[in-house]
Structures are given as C-alpha cells and as structure tokens.
Length: 344
Ligand code: AMP
Image 1 (tube, protein in one colour):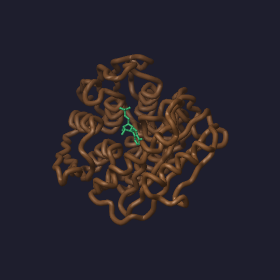
Image 2 (tube, protein in one colour; image 1 turned 90 degrees about the horizontal axis):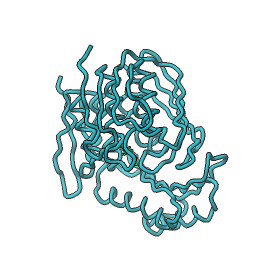
Image 3 (cartoon, protein in one colour; image 1 turned 60 degrees about the horizontal axis):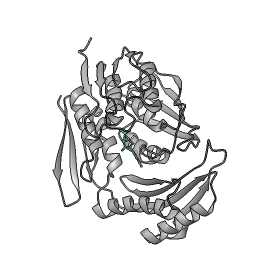
C-alpha cells in the first residue's frame, strides 16, 4: 500500500478545489491521503453538501475507506482500493455544483475497465462553479481532443439556491489521454450570448441581451433568451460563448436579488472582453481545470492569463501526488504560457 499523503487544504484560495483535486488524483494514482483544514478560507469552512457528495462519489467509484466524511468536517482520510465503473447516481441534495462532483470522478472513470453512466442531481448553474454549458462545451471538448469518449446531458436545470437539477455523464474508458497543446485560439468560428431564465420575468433576459449587444457590439441575432420549463426554482444566468478553431470559451454571470440585469450582463461581458483583449486561448477558469488532465496525459501546454489562486492550488496538489511540475513563462503583457511537465 502506498504511503498516505497529508494535504493542507488551506493552501491557495483555501476552497474546495484542494479536496476535489486530491480525490481525483488519489483515485487515479491509488495514493491514500489525509486532508486537513478543508476550505479553511471560506466563510463556512469544512465539508458542505457538494464536497461531501464529491467525497462519497469518489469513495463509491474507488471502493475507498473514508474517515471524517460528514458535514462540517475539516479533516478526512481517504484510501481507495479499486475502481467500480458502471451506473451510479449521486445526489447533492442542495444547489451544490453537480459539475464539480463530475469533474472529481471523471479522470478515474476514463481509466476504468468498463463504460460508466453517472447521474448527479444538484446545482447545474451556480455562481463559483462551472455552469453546465461550460462543462459540456468548453471543458469536455478539450478532453475529447485528448482522446476521451465522454458526453454530458443536461436533464434539468438547477439554479442556486434551490438546486433540483440533473446532469448525466456517459464515459467510455480510453487507453490513455493524449498530450495536447492549447496555445492558440485559431480563427473565430462563432459566438453567441444566451440569457437563461427560470421562473423569472422575460424582461430580464431582454435587458441582459441588450446590454451584451451594447457592450460587445454584437448583433441581436447572436443573442438568444431561453426560458427553462419546469426548473427546480428561479434563476438566471447570462452566458457569452466564443468559439474558435482550437478552443471554445464561455463566460457566465448569475442573476442575483438586488443586482440589476444590466449589471449581471456587464459582468459576463467584462470577462469576455478581458479574454478577447489578451488574445489567449484559455480563460482563467479553464486554466485551473487543465493541469490535472494534462498531467494524466503525461504533459501538455496552454496559454492563458496570469495564474489565479485556483491554478496555484492545482499545481501544488499535482506536485504532491505526481512527479509533475507546471512551468510558466510570460509571453506578453497579458499572456502566460504554462507547460505541464511530468517526469517519467
Ligand atoms: P472552488 O472555489 O475551490 O470550489 O473551485 C471552483 C471551481 O469552479 C474552479 O475550478 C473554478 O475555475 C470553477 N469555476 C468557478 N466559476 C466558474 C465559471 N463561471 N465558469 C467556469 N468555471 C468556473
């Protein structure tokens, strides 16, 4: 049995990512770990429902022995003992992010002995997590380029704070991921903005899309409102999607009580504008999600904006579980190149 690693969960931004990345890497490397100070820098530290669901999902997939898996827990021990593919259903029980739970177990499922179908019930559109469309149209296409056979379906929208959404993931294992580089966008292929509304007045979507047209200089034909039928509860998200030859990026902002629709749309536009001006292929959120699959592929490179605390956390945790280093080099005022290097 491999030696147990001890991880300090307060590193970097001190959120749930250190835990989820440790779970993902523990499953694929078979290394047991103990994590302390879970979410130490968050207002309500310790395991919340989303993190507990990620722990339980990883424990099921990895037939793991777990200590401390309860709400509020700040320390857990996790020791995987194999891999159980097949059909699994996990329920967050709140609006905690379903996509973050899926990102935790997907790398292991890709290495399984048989296909898997995973259904996660919870939030599909939460602030501070990848919205479903980001997961399906930005993150998964990169994994597919690396050789993964994986598809996601949104079966029901679940907005924060009610949740009640459902995502299905189908995974066919592959012999191994291919190392790739995402260092250029390539030519523009398409762009669109969507204002999604659940149980809210339609006028909100109109004002948001008018704002997108004004801020980004887009045409109304590139913007579409989407009213969700049978949502788990009310919610609103504005998504600005930019499709290029080599990468698709998506910038999201969420409707909030007391925040004007115009301001919500401006937030998504500001992120999109920063990305466009920097002329990089990989935006800030995608940047912290690439090092893990790239490391499992044996390496890779991407060009993005300056490193976020989330990206630093990913690099730290990868270094602990694998002989992996992420080297960086500034390429221009706004662009940085990140090389994921794995020692043989
Ligand atoms: P944590 O804050 O530790 O729970 O980690 C949140 C994860 O969700 C990170 O990988 C973020 O990059 C990702 N994330 C947060 N907001 C977005 C967004 N709007 N689009 C895509 N990914 C996001």
